[in-house]
Each structure stands twice: as C-alpha cells, then as structure tokens.
Length: 448
Image (cartoon, rainbow, N blue to C red):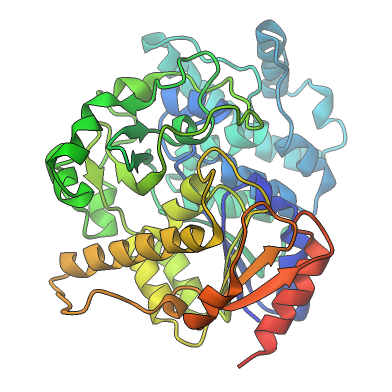
C-alpha cells in the first residue's frame, strides 16, 4: 500500500524499517511529510545567520534512509562541542582534508564539497553584518542541504539531490510540509492566554535563557476579553496567505524579527522535562517575524501524495511542535478529510513530554481533530466557501488509534468506539517497536 507518514524527526526515525516493509519492499510508495519550523539546536544558528526554512528534521530523516554508508557518516556528522575545535574541523571539511572524506569517492566528494563550499561563502558574506556563526554541534548534513538550497533555489530540489546522491529508493519521498525558501515559525497559545513563540521555546527552551523567554506576556489579557479565537484577531492581525505563490513573497532573512526569535537556541536538552508549560496548549499557529498569525499552504507535492495514499500515519513525536505544524495547514487537512477510502492511523506516544503533560488519550485525539477542523474552516473561508455545519465526524480524521498498554497516555477504548475509531493495543513492549507496529499496520491495511 502507498503510505504517507506525517511526523517530526528523531522519534519516528526508529520506525522507518516498519514503514519501508509495508510499502517500498512491496513496490509501493512511501512518503514522509516533515515540518520546517524547528528553530532549536544548530538549526537556530543557520536561521539566525542565513535564514530559510528549518531543515534539521528533514536531514535527520534522510540520513536514516540513505543507502550509502559513507554519506550516512558525512551527513550525520556533528562538529565538536568545543568552539575552537568545531571551527578547525569545519575548515578541514571545507578544504577537503578532513578524515571523513577518506572513504568517499573523489567524484562524490567534490560534488558534496561544492555545496559545502557554497555554504561557507554564504556564511562569510553574512557574518560581516552580524554576530559570528557558532559552529559547535553543527550538522554537516544541515550545511549541505542549506548550501544546495541556496544554490538550486529550491528546498525540494536540495532534498531530492541529497537522496539521489545517497542512493535512496526512488519509491521513498521526503517532503517538507511547506515548499518554501523562507523561515516559518510557530507559536503556542495557552489556555491561560499566554503566548509562547518559537518551536524550541515551546518544547525545549535553551538553558542559556530564562525559562519564560519565549512567552509574550502581552498576550495574557486575552482570557479576560473573551474567546481565544476572536481575540487572536486583535493580537495577531495578520493577513491570510491564500496561494503558495504569495507565501514565496515573504521573508528569507527579514530585517525585523521578534526579539525572542533572535536568541540562539543552540544549547538545550531534549531530555530535560523538569518544567512543564505554564498551562495546556489551546492551539498552535504559524506567525510572521512580527508575531502576526499567517496561514501558509501545504506543499503541493504533499497534497498529491496524500491523494494517492492508502494509509496516512500520524506518527510518534512531539504532538504540538512536530505533528500539528503539518496538520494545521488548511489545504493538507482538507485533502486528508476528503480521502474517504484512506486509513488514517494515529500512533500514541508512550510517554508524556513538556507539551502534553497531563493529557489523557481523549484530549490528545481531540487536540488533533479540533486543530484540523479549525484549519479546514479557515481554508474554506479563504476560498469563499461557508459551511452551515462546521463540525466533522471524528473518523473523518482518524480511523484507527494504536497505543501501548503500558504507556503513560491512557486510552479508554469505549469512548473511541462510539466515534467509530478502532483501537489497537500493543502489550508486548513499553515503547513503540518497529516489528510490532508493522504487524498492526498490516492488519489495519487489510480491513475494509
């Protein structure tokens, strides 16, 4: 069956063998749709100096799919934590003298180096007018992808180049959820009216900054005035983007950007969950550099793959910052809704994280359904389509839920059965394993 997987980076990487086994090994297409809004880690330095979309999750997934082991090592390589050592090693890679090039053929080496050199030239141009680039922890794969995007003028083209160089299967596609050369940030509106700006600030704030650095405290008055959605129009009086062409007129490296988005997010610890959000997330939204809400369109290539899919999987990872940035794209949510014969499978995380702490399975699912319903309503309104009944059936968005018996997020199957959602329990492990998941997905694929 043709499979589309919506996910972020790290968590789903361990499940790639499962998705390959149920699709490409049987001669069918496998598509990964990934967000481009992660402004944390070494990606934050690229965004700060060069601009453009965040490509950390995309690079992470491609490296997992590459068949050329030498290029897996190259594109998966990170520079040292020490500032001086990192800069020295980067210069050696640019010059071609670093040991990492030793086992790579000359023709492939020079092809890869050309884009890395192009990235170095771009950095040299940019750092004259800003603070020096911080090379520690930097990913060589991120440098290659960014250099290729700048040279080719297309994020999609740079991804395809990296996959073809690394001998990925032509049946596997990695697609950014938005086809853009520009930066897209997200914000989280909390139920207490606070706004946290930036994906890294939402999920894993930098230790070098105060914990609430990303919170726009001016948003706190919202809950005193009325409904969140009504007063977001006051707080975030942004223009809606109706077409992909309009989105391309935005910013690559804007002159002005919100102060909280300028700070480096290089140093953070994804495992540090010692402090949860001040309040639950009400909704996730895209913003421009001024903090105004925007509504970009999903990548047309992603739309095309969803239309042809037999199964769409909402995979594990951060719900608010990895999955929802994909699903709140109005045209993408719309095409998922209209895919009546497609299995739509949600994988429930085995553990809580900072973003969803305290949510049970019901509210976990409701967050997805409410977010997609809101996105579709906004998309239809932008097209002049006004529906008298704005509510949708739950099974229009999710047909199946897979969860772990011993997972922290509890599922009450009786509630979901009332909404015609099938539940599948995995009892043999305390985390989502590729082999067990494969069995369940094959069973779901065979059902009418």
